[in-house]
Image 1: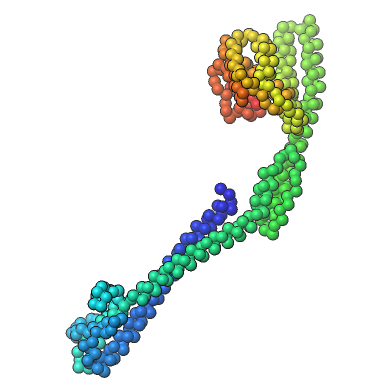
Image 2 (image 1 turned 180 degrees about the vertical axis):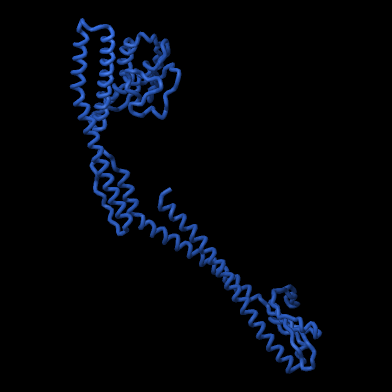
Length: 393
């Protein structure tokens, strides 16, 4: 996942949660305020009704109007002493509507001049309040959605602009190659962290290119310089081996030294070949027939390793396997694959070389598969190391 998408998703989830909590708190705060205003209106209206009843006792026989109802219930002195003002929501049957309507109820007690205590039960219809709350809820939801959309779009645009220098630097890093000259990083920004990152990336790229060139030059120079002393050493050993005064044991030691120098020569040639490949010296390519290379190499190799008594099975498709590559490298590759398959095969084993129009498969009757972790590692050896081998890869 890209950094911009990850940051945007995290911010969106946080904003969604924050706005949901804010919306819920806002909604319940408004509801509480509306209920509180309704209760204040009930208390004021109840006080007016009580004053009217004290002035005109006939009010005690009335029950209010369409939007508000009130009832007077005589209570005892003991009940009056324990009475508490209470507010609650309830329903009341309205005969004109023939249904129960929601009401807000207020109960309070008072004493008439004659000493009789009454409980006033005052009810106000909450239909208008509920309609207002429902409308407010819908407006709040619409406002929430619009605000979320605007915030999400704005956040996306802002984050896209903020991370633009980072995206440019990532694209620049992706096209870097150690063997190529480092191109300038045109990534101007006012963000301090990105400036430091640009400088560090540029310094790292230049250092990597410099180290690569030094390593490449060292391998090439070392391989070239080693060729002459190795050749001289092998020549002197050959001359020394012709000395008739040497004993058999001394000749065996000379042979061991000569073999060691032979492996050093092979290793030196391998390093030189790798250096030339990495330097891009094998740029010429042409259509190379893998089948023709196999037909050219297999007879000679089978003759050289005739002592292993291998059975060769050659499978070839009607159409030849042709690839476009450097012919010299193709020859080295096919030769190495065939020699490995022969050297690491069992005596009297089977060697199968099969080609199709798009593939080459070389298999033998070895007793163990190659280690996949070491297959493409330079100079890596299997457990059964061959003395004359410089390893896989």
